[in-house]
Image (cartoon, rainbow, N blue to C red; front, side, top):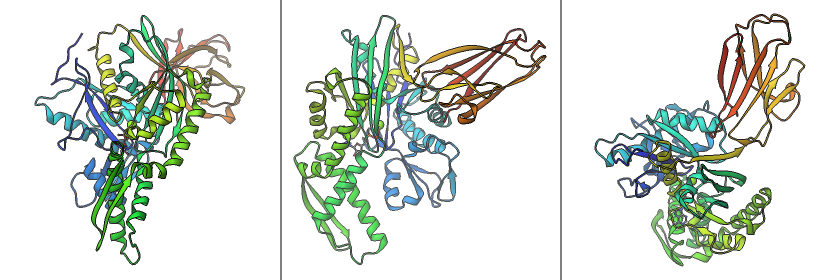
Length: 492
Ligand code: ADP
Ligand code: MG
């Protein structure tokens, strides 16, 4: 077993839609790195214009983004499904992978600066549960592009559960856990069954749901409208530049006030010269803020009901709730959760915006054998689409059905349909139909060099395997011809 080493640590990075964080595993528990402004998380924003040599990343980029949104990218995580998109900032073009790698590199460099001779053994980067294999591998590619040694990736709700040490609790052997993640841009709900057996711990996802347009930014927007109204600002006749600046200052003021209102019953909002000669000087009560985001609470309530139903559970079956995401600090969330699943079940004592990074560093320690668990961690998810092989008669032979628990592996033996066939093209399909024409072709494996045999006398073994990271690999074996081909398939 390797030991903790400050110079050669293992790291976890939470690459968030709006904010990112980086943590190191230590024997005493995870430690989150601070940036020079003593902040633990920073904006996942990149800004570039022609005046600069290098792109700006983080909280300064966010400030620029508000003044000059054309040259900034916020929420690149939402673009990770298509690596070929181009994002134009200033006179340069970037891909989503490049933008993500800039964020990862920036986050990493803060950690690097804290320790002379820093040379990490590797990192684990987190991804949302619903990310497909393509999004996962694009995220891993971004980390590699940032020069990081990627030990693995892990789903955010699982990382959060590891941060809460569910794997270490002796008495916890079979529990239904709901991860309630309310961040800056998205609301993600995951219900899984956690089991702890002698040789492995398993996270089996039972149901998920959420809203990818519901989070802190929406709350900021609503509160900024309320502030504008209460301050009685006169927007008539203002220049476009002044209005844009005022809007950005209002959003900033709203975010600040919102965060304070999680701890105080009321707060002052004071902003001199928000517009030429106009000031903001008002007081906001927590109740007023809560009232203006009430419809979002109704939405979250409905989503929870749906996901609990999808998991074939009743509310009382949920044994614990883990709060994740900065916005889960809003006190009313506790009310919402205790009304839903009962009191005393909610865990939120670890910083909700940091626990995903912390859990990732624990998983990194596990992968790098720094933690002596002698247990396997298994994350069971389900496939979204059926996968199979195209047959000569126009049908698809399905190897992996939809909704199949993953990781999984399935082998089937096929044969040639013509005499003395020397090469084959094996077409791979994804989709619900029995027929090739209604499904999506996801790849072809070319198999040359077959020994000549009559039709039906050459066995071709095809194996589909889906890993924990949701990557799909297909293996073709033809023994007499000494052929063994393995190809990775990208699903979209
Ligand atoms: P991400 O969604 O990118 O993973 P986080 O989990 O870090 O991001 O959540 C960021 C959001 O949390 C921001 O909108 C921020 O304003 C909000 N937030 C942080 N602290 C508080 C707080 N004390 N009260 C309410 N919202 C908060
Ligand atoms: Mg998050």
